[in-house]
Image (cartoon, rainbow, N blue to C red; front, side, top):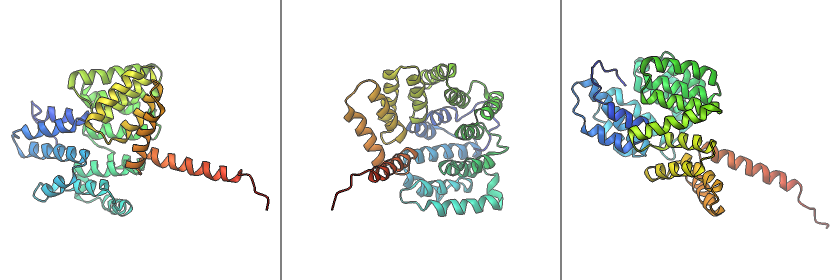
Length: 303
């Protein structure tokens, strides 16, 4: 978002709620803000509409963007991409052209965020990193670290974490980024990741799907399966359709000895409601490969 030159961050509570995935709280906080200047208005609206997008409430965003700041308009592209039945290849092709053009919108942080988000969903992490190159804001730097981890480059991510710590060592995003990195490294870092997420929960309250999944993964890695399931269950109450929570609950329910049909229900729900999720695609690919191999060994019937 546009940078604020103020002693007091008027959007402090909005940002923290958004960063931990508590989108309804972010919306509530944003609607209570009385902005002191146009920059705060822009930033508030950006977090507000991104929270609605994260909830899947696209119509509200499209309707209100018609009369909002031009700098917010790239959010329409994100809505188009995430909407059911979207022609994603065409949207990505158009985005590629806009990025290659290096027009004025490439200096708009909201456009950079939208472009990087779409490339991240496409698993085109190199394109996302190019967009994020030289980014100055804390959020875009944290996004860069996320891309590096997705590319299995924890070495570069660790170096990048230093830039976040230099800006805001005890900030929510920095704490989340350190938890992502520690979890990816395993070993002693898992305990640190677990403690970081627990501290965020104590300080900020309810966690959304992303941080809850990180905390649950860390707890599970330490053999604390009941705690992991509790974190996932509490987050799912706020985001019942989140695929990562469904997947996590399928795993934890098995480990704590619940009937197999419990895990099967979570898995079926994930496969049915999220056909484009990486796990769903991989699951169907493996199932089809198994069927193909099994067919080769079917007993022949004598004529």
